[in-house]
Image (cartoon, rainbow, N blue to C red; front, top):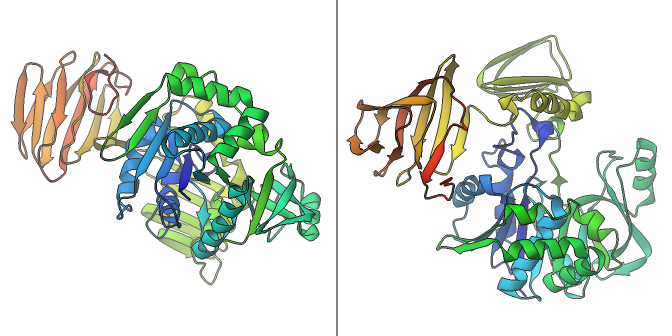
Amino acid sequence: MELIPVILSGGVGSRLWPVSREAHPKPFMELPDGQNLIQKTFLRASRLEGVVEVLTVTNRELLFKTEDEYGAVNKAKLAQGFILEPFGRNTAAAVAAAALQLEATHGPDAQMLVLAADHLIQDEKAFAEAVLSATKLAAEGWLVTFGIQPTYPETGFGYIEAQKDAPLKGGLKVARFVEKPDLNTAQSYVSAGNYFWNSGMFCFRVGTVLEELRQHAPEVVEAVSRTIEVSRLTSSNKYRCLALDADSFAEVPDISIDYALMERSSKVATVPCDIGWSDIGSWNAVSELTDADENGNRFEGEVLSHGSRNNYVNSEGRLTALVGVQDLLVIDTPDAVMIAHKDHAQDVKHIVNQLKASSHTVHLLHRTVHRPWGTYTTLENGERFKIKRIVVKPGASLSLQMHHHRSEHWIVVSGTAVVVNDQKELMLHTNESTFIRAGHKHRLKNPGVIDLVLIEVQSGDYLGEDDIVRFEDKYGRCDA
């Protein structure tokens, strides 16, 4: 049996702002052990028995960032595939696209294991045992969910009710899915013993899930099929990539796999499991990953505390001092600080909504922004000027591009740069520079084997990132 983990990486994680942002969402948040959630998910999936490939469904803007994160941990060089969404269309569309693609590449008898990129599972052995049970049920034609054994009456999760009188080998038949309950209802669920947290993880035989989708949500699978027919599929020695057509994908219904299929099908089973699962849905959940001191404080970074109790501080960039406070969350990033009472950790999303409403870019980008070719960091931003630190990876290059409203001055700090500046091609070394006028085509390449680091000084009437026209681009971002 072939098993293909399908990693869904689409959520922003607004409750984890200011670390999680649209261009650097929750799956890429680094945890105290140095790995991020998407790396942990990839490793956990790749170590399962029978895995032949890992397929990731993500936003097309995150492809190269995801590739970099996988490359850092994929020592076994496991085969990879990507499905790139132009925008989010919820989980039913993602699952349908993955199933159709796997049917074409691996056949209807292959099994797909659907995982969220931003969940943490701390008991990997128990997880592998649960997956084994799920694959056996999936082989019999069940659509399998993973029900997490509740340890307390959580009101922030949906629940799965299992039929007490319908045991299956390795699982239970599902009676219904339940929305997030109030506290009293959640307490009754925990006492009942046959209710489980809905983890959002699934296992199906590819042919079965497509048959059930065609029966219960034909509008989803038909719209996704039409999208795939007009989408671009490319292959390389690194991975296979299906970039979904934006116009067709816009016609796909925006609905979750739970609503579209799992709540309608009569073939749903659950595997109850205790695997150390967390959806890392708030800063309170993140804080639990750090050991507490004698006062109940949990600190990441350099923190001084006097008379303070039960606080969590994440402040890697500078010293933070607490005096006489308690039950606070303090999250410090180079361009934003978030302070919240622990009882209101779920309300951080409202600040993100305010930022969106005011068109403030701090909900979108960090000061350091990842690009396919490397990174740039905004050092200073003033009226009519901006200063950036640009790092270009060995062998990488920026697009051949032009700006209407700004000129740029590039100074090489380390490494070697090959620069196209209007009609000229230059090679610049440390402490050498070039000036690029507005309206001139230009390109930056790193021909060396070490990072190219340079300082860019922009000046002009408008310095927005959208003032760019691309003529050639090795990463498929060309406008012309």
